Amino acid sequence: MKIKILSIIILILVFCATGPVFAQNATVNQIYDGTKNFAQAMAEALPLNSSLGLNWSDAYIGKLIGKPPHFGVGASAGFTTVNADAVHDLLGYFSVMLPASLNDLIPLPAYTGELRLGGFGIPFDIGFKAGYLPSLDLGGGTELNYFQIGGDFRYGILEDKGLIPGLSVGFGAYHLTGGIGADLPDQVFGLDTIKIDIENSRGDFTWQSTTLELKAQISKKLLFITPYLGLGANYAWTSAGFAVKGKVASQGEYAKTIHLLETEGLTGIKYEAQKELSSEIKTSGLGFRVFGGFAFNIMAVKIDLTGMADPLHKVFGASLGLRFQL
Image (cartoon, rainbow, N blue to C red; front, side, top):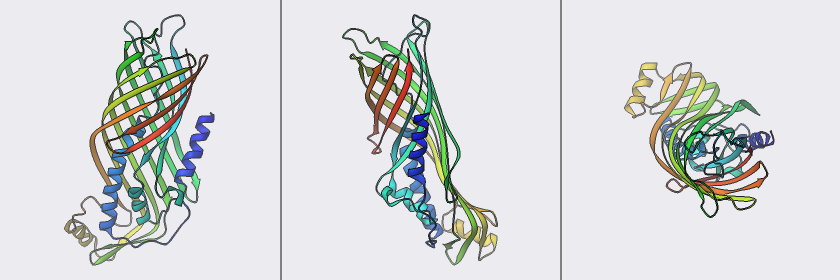
């Protein structure tokens, strides 16, 4: 419960806007370029963010059927970084301003509840995780949504015994969705020779990722501390974008507006008169992460401190985990 409360506090600090400001009168071209940069930033950040949770110190926890049976339950909370410029640029075009303290570094928070069960027969264990925040009201008409679910399978190659460390290899599958919604001031966006006006608008900025990962981990229990180190390679399918809904109207006919969008190469912008202006960019690609840290072992209670990084995309993160494990 303490971890969940801490996570919610982090989420509020990160995403709470400073209040309404005047619209910047951006062009649709700027918005589309900003959306592509935002989607690229999320494609680089989300695979690492989705891997938060289930990073337990023990490379392999043992068999479920035994004396004692080996299983564990707990929770983790933490963050990974995302490109600050890309986020500020897109939100700024819609007059959503984040606190000045987030100008250089934006942490993307996450939390999960976790369950891991030892295997039987062959040396393996399986883990499950999930985290959920349903439309958390941050005040000022701003809401945050967050959902994550995933699992992994680890096969124990070496058992942590004597001078021999524990070593496992495995794979994981993770899915997350998130978004921030905010009431917006009236917007005026330039498009060639016309303007697109949006009144009484609501903006939703969303992201999504599905990640498959191969990983390996080594660990060694030393009295009350278990240090560990892991490597992971992943392939992720991500999407990110915006949808601004309200009284959407252009100063030209609907057909002319659509034609101008096509002429300007903005077919990725969806325009619906009197309904919305939106765009979603999808991408996929390979990623890599290194993770590690140490756990404090207090009888059956484990406290994990984990650091993680994707050196290819220059993003990093950290998490704190607490669990009961036999």
